[in-house]
Image 1: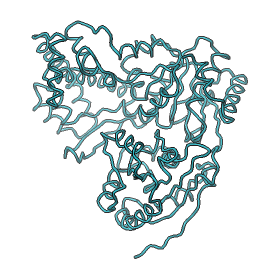
Image 2: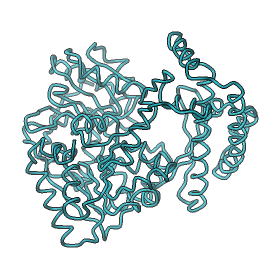
Image 3: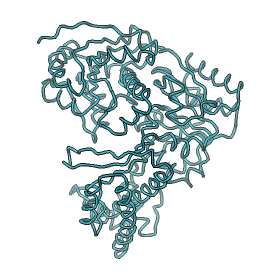
Image 4: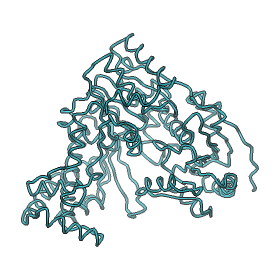
Amino acid sequence: MSLKKDLLKYQPRKEQQECIDFIDAEYKKNKENKFFLLNLPVGTGKSHLALMIADWYLKNVNGNAKFDVITNSKILQDQYVETYESINDLKGKENYECAQYSCSCAQGNEFNRLNKSSCDFCPHSGARDGYVSGRMSLTNFYLYILFQLYMTKMMDSRGGNVLIVDEAHDFDDVMSDFITIKITEFVVKKLKFSNEDRILKDLKKINNISGYIDFLKDLQGEIATTIGDVERSLSAEKRNARSVKRENAVNKVLGGKNSDIKLMQVITDLQQYQSKIEIFLNEYKANPNNWVLESNYNEKTKQKELSLEPIWAFDYLDKYVFSKYDMVFLMSGTILDKNLFCQLNGLDIEKAVYYSIESPFPVKNRPIYYMPLGKMSYKSKEDTFKNYVPFIQKILNKYPDKKGIIHTNSFELASWISRDVNNPRLVYHDSSNKDLVLQEHYATEKPTVIVSPSMDTGVSFDDDKARFQVIAKIPYPSLGSQKNKLRQKNNPDWYTWKTISGLIQMTGRAVRSNEDYADTIIIDGSFSDLLKYSGHFFPHWFQEAIKKVNVKINA
């Protein structure tokens, strides 16, 4: 279907047309404007606006342009694809099924590479070709940055002219994650090094950045050697498609994987770390002062983990992304401040324009009840949680037949609720099954309530999917992170902006249209500090919805 036919599916909303009019006026005023920062609350229809922007650009700037649309999750990606047929969608190889080998396209690709063969039809290759050649192509932040860092020839071949970033408030964090280097004991064991014991000993000796750099340089040689060793062992016995397909079918029944599949995955992992280390070493050499050594304890593996992380990502965003486009549109409900957002994302403020609107939803449909039960700060969180337990039960009883969400901002707080709030309506997820739990919540007729630390952005709980939500912890970035400490020290406004951005994103999950309605209840008393000291960051439409509720807490 053509872009024109997709545009005809919906009559443009007032907010969408006004945004296009603003873009048109600013472009005509100064054609050097490159960055359009669009601060658009939930309900503006940013997905459809992305298509309207493309249509405007084709008519007014370049009739042959190509558009790259990126968003922060596969869930949002799917929403685009389900709505519009003119968009060329691309996900990772593991999301496509290889018919020839009865496995994912990721595994099938490795079989073909080793056998120097090819499938008659590859669904991933077809989607990739459509992405490269398409007028309007879509993927998620993670895959897009992977392309820009490690598959530059493909992106150069695509030749996108315009970048449209949906949920742009998250983009710098994803870039930072990609540049970050984390080598753990688990990673070393997974990569099947012949010198595993020595490498693990060297890993445990690291106590500073220079030691980590030396370790990575040594690891480069070990990776190259191991790739050669594994490839030679796999090439010794060539497998044809029929035998592989038969083995895969047996292993599916047995719930396992054959040894060849495991080894091929090792090769892929080794190559990814090889590229990642090379890029990191180049970037570290260019700016060694932008890096910090983070130390964390992994509760699952019971191991200390060290990572090298960039303090700021703006240099890499400009180098690997924004410099490649003629025009960039950044859409989010929480850009909030033009100057700060430009600084954090490495945008030339002289070539940036900012557009912001009020929420289009009636304030009576989106009340924010502030019911402080104590501060969920590090020092007082355990005492505050004791106050939470009876009130969470009361809130659940107030909405007995309604679905809802409890935003915890941490797995620790979610686990405390699971331990102490005995209610069968509460459902939980871990880092591996979030999407599955979300879909089950959508589908069930029961009034389930999701308790989650990570459904604050990119997820829609429209209509009966949530009629209430509880914000149990203000989303302050953790100061247990050395990176966050340095960011706060170097730019205190970042810390405030990140917190308020996260909070506004949370409140936007449950009211998604003019007719939709839901109650938001904030129970963390730390909200008072934000209102008192950082009220200027909160938009008017947010502040007008706040209603203070005084509660009596039993001692």
